[in-house]
Length: 212
Image (cartoon, rainbow, N blue to C red; front, side, top):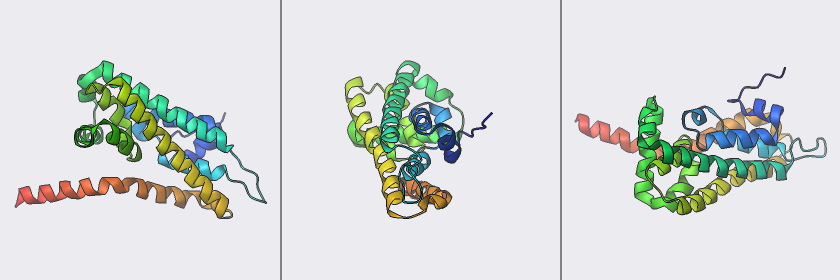
């Protein structure tokens, strides 16, 4: 029996290929606590790399399949997350345990209040942790279904296709780049966390000011 670690992108891609991309991205895009433990950025980028072939080795994944599965998983996951929030409401979000989840929920509420539906749903897709709770929060806050569906689809397609194509472009340009997937994944993690840096600095400054 093939053992698969769902938190390890290499394991998921080796076992399920493009279908693994669909399943993981679906869960990470709206299944609340479950999505926090699954790779998103760190799955899409390596999947794109594995779609690029070379003179020595053919592509290990089909680019069109990965692009399609990534888009379907992102959009379908966002819609399911919205329905979870719509029917579970704030009571569901309040029952979620763990500081990380509560902080991400509060951040999602601030993002929606500050930028409105369109910008928030597009920007939020590119922020780890936030994209997992953003869609249930939108449902709980009563965001209308039509604008939610439009903008979460735009955000989901942009996020998923950008990361896959970035990995594919790098894989097609640099020979044997797949030998360095682990360092590449680490770089993707660091880059994906950069949007959280300004808010972390503001929170640190606020704590420092309150203690003075």
